[in-house]
Every structure is written in C-alpha cells, then in structure tokens.
Image (cartoon, rainbow, N blue to C red):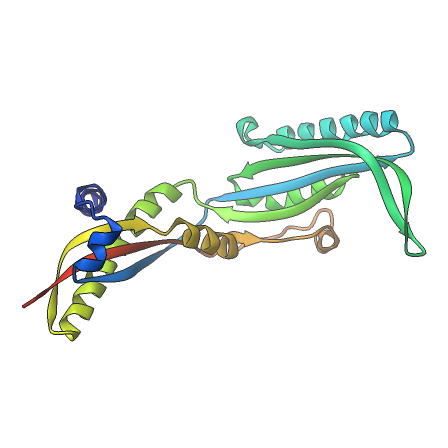
Amino acid sequence: MARWSFLAFALLFAVPEIRPDDERNVPHVTVYGTATIQVTPNQMMWFLVVRNVDPSSAGAAEAHGTIVAKLKAFLRQSQIAEETIQTSRMQLGESFKFTRNERVPDGYAASTDVRFTLDNFARYASIWTGLSEIPGVQIRNVSLDSSERIKYQNEARTKAVLAARDKAKAIAETLGMQAGLPLAVEEDISAVEAFRAVTTNTTVNSESMAAFPSGTDQSVAPGTIPVMVRVKAVFSLSKK
C-alpha cells in the first residue's frame, strides 16, 4: 500500500507544468478517475442545539447557563471525551412567534450549538435518552465517521489516479493512439465534499426521540460509510 501511495504522490508533484495555451496545442485526453472504499465507522458525531425562551433577556441568559451546565455535566458523566465537546454560536436576542399570520414578540431566546463525538456505540441509547430528558436540548444531526478517514482517503486517492490512467489508456486505444505522460492531475475537492455530505449524515429530529423510551435497550447498526476520491487528469496522446 505504501508503494502505491508513493506513486500517487509522485504523479501529483512530478508532472510537467503546462499552460492553457500549450494544452490546446498538445494532443491530449482529459479524464476523471473515481475510487470509493467502504469503511466501517467507529465514530458518531452529534450536533445539538440548546435553546430556551424567557420574558426577559436576563432570565433567558440565566436559564440558558443552567441548561448548558447540566448538559455538559451529563456528557462528562456519560464518559464523553472532554476534548471532543465543543460549544459555538452562542446567541441571545428577541424571540418571535406567528399569531394570526402576524409576527409578534415572544420574549427573548438564548441558544448555543454543542458538538461532541461518541466512540462507543453501545452507549448510544443511554445518551439519546438522557439528552431527551434535558429541557431545551434538541438533537439536530447525528452522523457516522471513521477516525482513520485520512488513511482511507489516501488509499482511495491512489486508486482514483490509477483509474484515471486506465481510462485514458482505454480511450487512447479506441482512437488508435496511446496515452503518454500526465500533463496535469488535480483532486476534485468539491465532488468529494458533496458526496460526503449526502452519504455520511443521518438526520434525526426532536419528534423522533419518542421512539427511544427511557430504559429501552437500542442496538445500532452502523453498516459502512463510503470514502470517495475523484481526480481530474490530463494525459498526452501520441500515435502508436
């Protein structure tokens, strides 16, 4: 595996530089290479929102501090690694509601985003139930990931480069030509990010928390998550 990783690294940095004007004048073929590896996840990424409303801003802030402190205490009690707990986007402002199709003031709202990572899926049910018992806490999203994602991305990147090379050779042979050295190789980051957003997130909502009554054991079937890499490569073409 290390040998192929070195090959991909060498291709990315050893290709000759080619300007756009030169590329048009050199017979070439542009291809995309894609590789996907199925990985068993070992991490569960939680995204929570703590939100409460009170008639006064001071009351909203005080109550909010109490809820966040209770949430942090519960996470520590649940053996969530302290370094994975993150709070962000703390906000305090007016709250509104719609009455008879009109937007009217409803006091003041305080909110905080909280993220943490769970690496022991056996504690999933107890954590879910415990969170549901803390007023003002909403589970906005739970996604699965792997702590070794970078390793699998490197492996997929190597396979994607090789797939692009093989595709270029096949196209060249169809045209009665042969593919030469790569003129350019780049990773399609936008395609990878879009693919990951669609395939790794499992969205849950507050209403579905009723499906996890207190004291009920729940099993988690993590299955596998795909790690995908896509590259764009340009190879020169020449006659056989």
